[in-house]
Image (tube, rainbow over all chains, first blue to last red; front, side):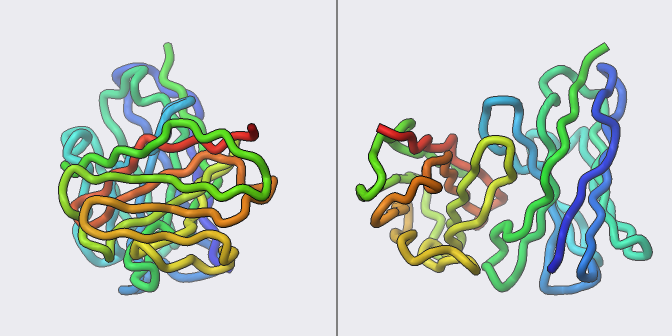
Amino acid sequence: QLQLQESGPGLVKPSETLSLTCTVSGGSIRSSYYYWGWIRQPPGKGLEWIGSLSYSGSPSYNPSLESRVAISVDTSKNQFSLKVTSVTAGDTAVYYCARHSITTTFAFDIWGQGTLVTVSS
Amino acid sequence: EIVLTQSPGTLSLSPGERATLSCRASQSVGSTYLAWYQQKPGQAPRLLIYGASSRATGIPDRFSGSGSGTDFTLTISRLEPEDFAVYYCQQYGSSYTFGQGTKLEFK
């Protein structure tokens, strides 16, 4: 049973860089059938896609965040990571990592439990 | 960017009733790249429907999806107590965007 787990600091200061890692267990990140993505949800609000990548391809990003976001993969650790630079209070959210699969026409079929990141001094 | 508008914002129903949730896209998303998710408080979203009408693994058959182009519907035929939650539609044909959600609450 494949599982995803987010990890990283729960508190980040304004103007600094938010860094999160998603660890994939119960399966390999190295598959051409899957993409790996990040989605966030501000408290009490809706979902926003941040970006996605495959283990071998270039990442794609939400145009509204593209200038501040980077997603990368470490196949040796079965992990992928998110960095958001120059954060503000508006970046406070629960951050989810998720898999999208060719078997579900690339809908997000498996999600991590999410991790709350608060931007505050 | 394709904008998804869900209606109603809140739907008040009782167990056993039928729920019909709507998702309208600002431009066509075809029929392959529309999904529905269920989210309960404190939990991650769960995939219910992909490709507009295919149920994800383990999803009960009381959940069904339909539509194509710009108009899509999620139907829950007979509500169970555990179905009261927030539902999001998502398109992934052109980048990825989510609707703002429909809250399904007890009447």
